[in-house]
Image 1 (cartoon, rainbow, N blue to C red):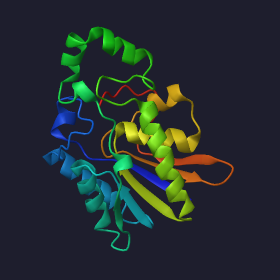
Image 2: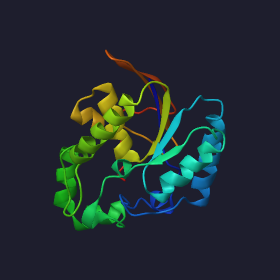
Image 3: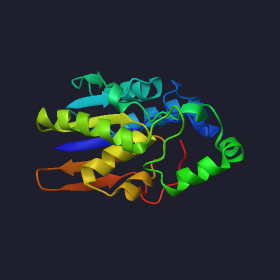
Image 4: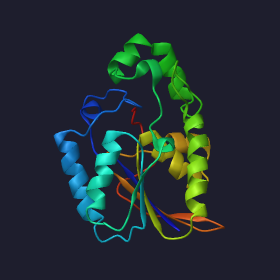
Amino acid sequence: MKFVIVRHGQTSWNEKKRFQGKTDTGLSKNGLKQAEMLAKKLSKEKIDAIYTSMLKRAIVTAEKIQKFHKEARIIKAKELNELSWGIWEGIKLSEVKKRYPELYEKREKNRFNFRIQKGESLKMVKKRIKKILSSIRKKGNGTVLIVGHLNVNRAIIGTLMGWKDKKTSSISLHNASVVAIEVNKSRAKILRASSSIENGNLPC
């Protein structure tokens, strides 16, 4: 079975480095261009199903891709929604560092388990991701494209590859990035990645 894991196109909050999480922001003009270019790059890929989160930025990216894959149905799943940043949502990264220096330092020391007030941890996200991946795999073989978000996609890749928590939490995935992973009963391997996915420091 093959998974093609895509991060949505850029939003204005990505550009301004705001923590957006579950806030339902749309794609920026640049993000729409990224999604259209991505769709063309994936136009010759065999895709049997398309999964996306319930958030506009992922749905629109998925719709752009589906234009070249009419036979693939778009399935929206709340399990694929981005990690909630709670009280940090809408705040710029630079401002978070000023207003919450101790909390930010705590987060940097343990990204996988850190949970902000009214938000989620990556550990919590991975738990729900495991459930939906299990459901997808039970449906059979083929190629499944998933349009997700930075932390959701970290959890997906880390789960499929069997990576440790620290490595999972530091995966780098830029907007409109693509990672293709082949999975069988005994192992998983990365077939391609549009950019280096290790040692990332992307905040939101």
